[in-house]
Structure formats: structure tokens, C-alpha cells
Length: 220
Image 1: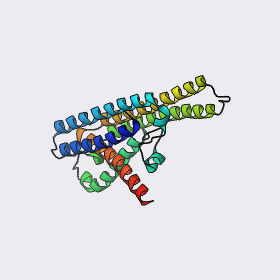
Image 2: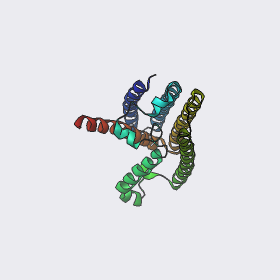
Image 3: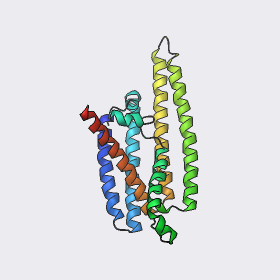
Image 4: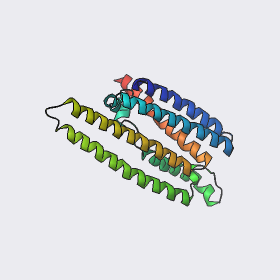
């Protein structure tokens, strides 16, 4: 699938995913919410499989992200969102909800949402964050080596270019693998209602960034 089409299809999928999750959330039924989360993760897995095929076809064009707005591109990391961003989003959402529910929590009333993360959950999230940041650093080192190596390609040969493009494909695929793995690790730590909330927040962020970016472009 062409990169431009993939980006458009995924944005539509995010809206459907968000609607499905919000509908499940209104039921307050753990099994229904768990099923909605499972469906959302299946969509993410399908999306990243499609990305892998698109990257294989044209790594250079994919890296340039022709399907996103300049605003989105300015906030992205290796052709997509930074893996640790999902953890930052979790902490942000948790903090906002915790403050709003502080009075209830002091009375022993628990909401069960992201404002009600247990110490054990927070410890596990911290472990995921440490692993994720460490692997982000490794991938950034690989990209830095590739970029420095491009300066040594003189005179340029076809074999050199093929090797560099192959390396770029590997870096993007590794970044995508870390994105999917981090999201899955975080979701696995959370209770069904909490998992629904973080997936909705992630969808809101992607959809919102696209809409803001498009509005900014139209206003220029």
C-alpha cells in the first residue's frame, strides 16, 4: 500500500477504534472493555504489518513521511511517534485524573481509571519506560552511524546506496517494532478501563495533531 494511502486509512481506523473503545467504556463491563482493547490491538498489529510492507517497497520515501503535515513531522521520531511518548501520555493522563479524584481517593473511593494506578502498576510502567528509552538510544545510535556514513560515499556506487537504503529499512522497522512493543507492554499492565482510556487518549493525540496540522497549513 502506498505510504500516502496508508496514512489516510490509518487515520480512519483510529476514529473507528476510538468510537469502539468509547462505546465499550460506557458499559462499565470489564469483559466488554477487554474485548474492545483486544480489537484495538489487532488493528495496531495490522497497521504495523502494512507499514513494514510499505517500508520494504521504498524506505527513503517512507522515512520522509509524505502523508503527514509539517507539524506532525516536526514532532515525530524516525517516521512515527516516539515509543516512550505513550508512557509520557500515560503519566500525563494519570496525573490529570489523579488530581481531579484526589478527594475521593483520600476517602478510599477508587475510580479504577488512569487516576487510580496502583504502586505495582507504576513500578512496572517505570520498568517499561527504562527499557524503551534505552532501546530508543540504541536505534538513534544506528541512525547516527548511517547519517555519518553517507558523508563517506564518494564516489557513490550502486552497491553503497543499496546497502545504506537496506540499513535505513532496518532502522525504521526496528523503530516500529519498539513502538508496537511499548504500546502492548503498557496496555498489558493496565486494567481494562485503564487500557481503554490510554488507547482513546493515543487516538485523540494522533487525530488531533493531524487536524491541527491541516488547519495550520490552510491558514498559511
